[in-house]
Length: 177
Image 1 (cartoon, rainbow, N blue to C red):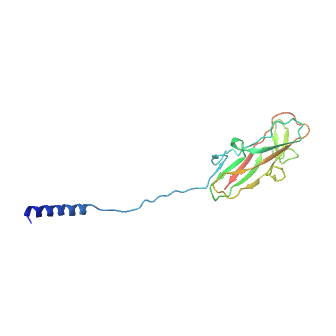
Image 2 (image 1 turned 90 degrees about the vertical axis):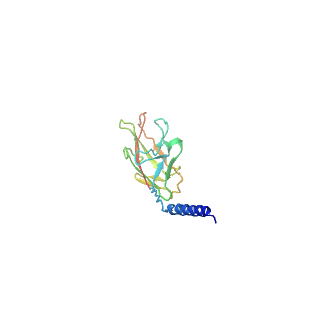
Image 3 (image 1 turned 180 degrees about the vertical axis):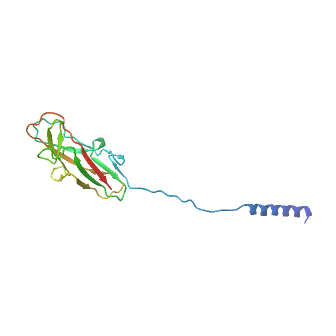
């Protein structure tokens, strides 16, 4: 073999071996973490306080009405909506109102600000047979991560001597999950 060709082969072999000696492979891992905490939304809004669970509107009645019925409606005019993390068991506690026990005929009362009260109660059924007492709870089925509808109804009872006006109440609500 000619001397020049041998030198070229040896030089090429040397370069190849040198390139292999410089190339190296290192392996390892990346650790990824995500921690999720249980959460709920009420009528599409999340948070830890000040949430709007809805409103109960008995409409406009004359001052001689006998009974007025209504349903707690959440945002958008539909029933209250509770969306919680899958696997949680949401429980709604309907706490005290601003004027509880101020008028015979109901556990709660709407007030006109001038010392007049209209008694009313919450019910868990449209037929008004399942009274929801003060601090009463509504336990929802275990959440699957899909919003659950909560139907809560009210019934106000008229009484003699009520003057015309706007009667209101504010009731505290807690959601545990």
